[in-house]
Image (tube, rainbow, N blue to C red; front, side):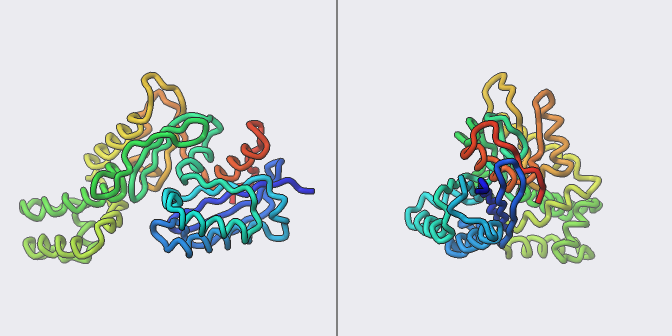
Length: 306
């Protein structure tokens, strides 16, 4: 009888699942669409997780799974009993008896380090830092959403890029590389400064606020955006440090698209003296956490990257 566990990474844009043997060999993998129950209908999110897990199981008997861990973006949604019951029905249909749902940040932390304690710093569209103790997030800093916070995030970077363009337009200053790129992305002709200023405001305000994140990649690619990058890195490092105790020597794990570019490099500089890792793959972290639950602290990590 093959002993195995199942790990799932359920994000906003995609879902992946792995079935992993006790020795770390990946036995099967599966994928589906986004399954964050905050950004997708919960019924759809549950169905997509079910689809990914079923593909990963293949011919394996789900009743033989020793554990399953789902790292889920939007896992707080399951505090609603009706939503929790919906996902519980999904586990039952799959034939899985032992399923634990964690945040995607916890799975990401476990993907990068075997340490039980530390800090996870997430910066994608939004931003949040979490204090990890015994591989579970016990407190957070940031993560208030675009209206109340998300400093240093993709949303924040995009907003600062648009503000730079508006400032240069309104002052009649020479448009820098970043402002020029912002206007091009927004489809605004810069020929008439005042018209361009009004039009950019109109375009941005005509979209959902979170769409400002679409301008974030322009910051990383512009040679005149150093001030914005420095400020973002300072804010993110400050958020990470807010979760840590004085003198703490545990690792920090960086997660998210913003931290994979120049902002991430600056964050590493500001965290000098601290062990810093980049998250490798959330689904591997979820699978390893399932293995730890099933087999203990000596559990093997998955051998393959999928």
